[in-house]
Length: 103
Image (tube, rainbow, N blue to C red; front, side):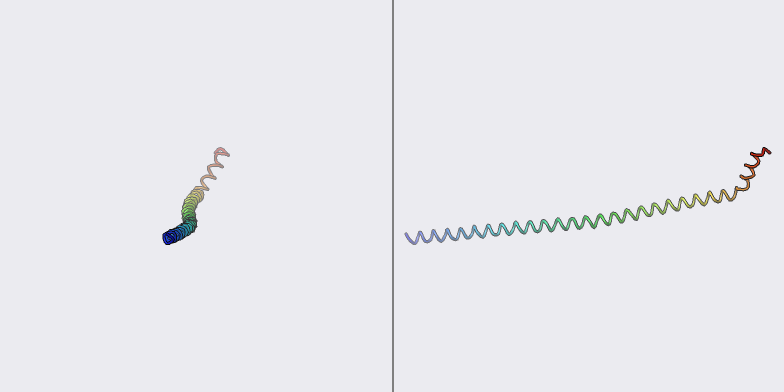
């Protein structure tokens, strides 16, 4: 009988040890999952920041190209106006004077 009681006590001790190990493994797993989750969150934020920087640079380049195109177009129109003025200046002055004097 005493042997049986000792076996039951031994089995209980082993069971308690198994439960203790399982709880320890559970805590370690939970800790590892939390660590990995935080690392994944950091990585995602880092990638998002890098992508945002890249997109901002791309948008800035596109805006610069549009500004350059507008400047080229404006300069072309300005050159056309200056040429038109240069070509017709004397005729316009004569026309204005003629209209004022009435001749």
